[in-house]
Length: 298
Image 1 (cartoon, rainbow, N blue to C red):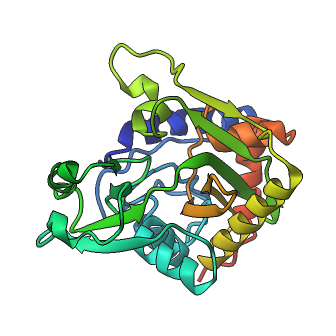
Image 2 (cartoon, one colour):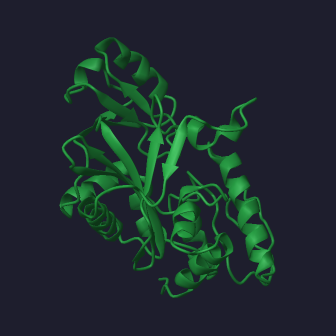
């Protein structure tokens, strides 16, 4: 089980209830080993595994092998989107604005290897839900950040910290959903703020506010839609995604990442955007299935 197991289980329960209400025959399966297997007669898989195995293309490869259709991106796009180093390389190739970055090896990296001026973001390149993200503003904190990240990946992604406003843009097929602005009081939108129920004794999260549709000028909205679509297409993502974008104080957008399996608990951001666009939670789940069935898998 990966670092996002509990999140995956919660989203799966929500999706299961929604699909059952629409008349689908639903069986929840907790995959724990490979090669994967499914009950005889399985005709579709709604993927709700966040992080490794679910988002990195391995499960999609297995499903292609078994000739079972499934939701969302295929193996190639999943691998590109999950690995932030590969994503950023593709963003640059396609002219998608993204923060300045460098890649370090956890085996040899020292504070002296960091070339990007502070403040910076240091993160594992193959995790989701902000797992392991370190914000570094002082030189004396770099060594601690390096030590923390060495436990998570063989590489470390170092990015220039973009300070400004945070947005996320949902994409369903060719449709861009209403834009969500994320306002995290006093810090970043980290795992604790995304999933407060994971923290013992915390039942709500007053530190985060979501505005959907975002209260922004149409010029900025058009810019965000444009960079989100370009990022989505640059990775070859099928069916759906949620694109995270920072806008700096001068109004310039920077794409952080493309999520090929966006959170789908009833309180997640893609369902929030869908509701703002007039699509119910159950309707969103059905739309994801319908879009995915149109994909020609190799």
